[in-house]
Amino acid sequence: MSYLQKQFPILDTKCLAKDIHELVVSCPEIASQAIAGQFVNIRTSHTLRRPISICGIDAEKGTIRLVVKAQGKGTDEICRMRPGDTIDLLGPLGNGFDVKNSNLKAVVVGGGIGAAPMYGVASVYGKNCAAILGFRDSADVILEKDFQALGCELLICTDNGTRGFHGFTTQMLENYLKENHVDIIHTCGPKPMMKGVKDIAEKYGVRCQISMDERMACGIGACLGCACKTKKEDGSSTYSHVCKHGPVFEAQQLDFD
Image (cartoon, rainbow, N blue to C red; front, side, top):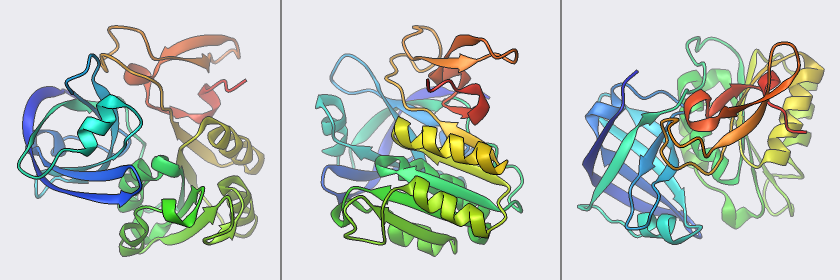
């Protein structure tokens, strides 16, 4: 799969929650080949591009949706962009999720901003998907209506109990697996959460794919700055690069310890 670098027009923006903004970008060349789990690298006025997971893909309209959390100067600049502005994208990059069989019973587990790439996955499975999304507080909940519109079962968790299940996504996932048959789990979010999802998937014998979030620079495997610890087939440890070999990995490939 090829990638390109170009400036594209922003069609729409909106604030989803405090410091979290959505951008709809017209980029037919990227939308036509992107798959759920891939990302784009965005140029700002600062030194490094910012890698942002693709939230939604509409190949027919030629658009992608990006959900960005303002966490520094670069992402803050992106969040301040408005309709009519142009945005410099490099993409689509990385290896996405295996969503070729939409008839499988899937669960997506998203933590915080990690809910965004899970929307793209859930949009493939539709009613065959259960979405378990975790947030710190009810004010942090994003994309709720979007997931509901897909027809998937939506289960929201909050750390403080102000919305939905009072507890962690891993607790809800284990409860769900005890009562439902699941073919595959896709997840993205904080590393402790993803490690917990990996352990639970192994316990119940369910295939699990994990989207890793590492600081990236080039996005194409040239600078080698986004290394993460992985396992070889013989069980020994090595290092892979998130932008080139990921960001999506099979759970058993990852060494969280």
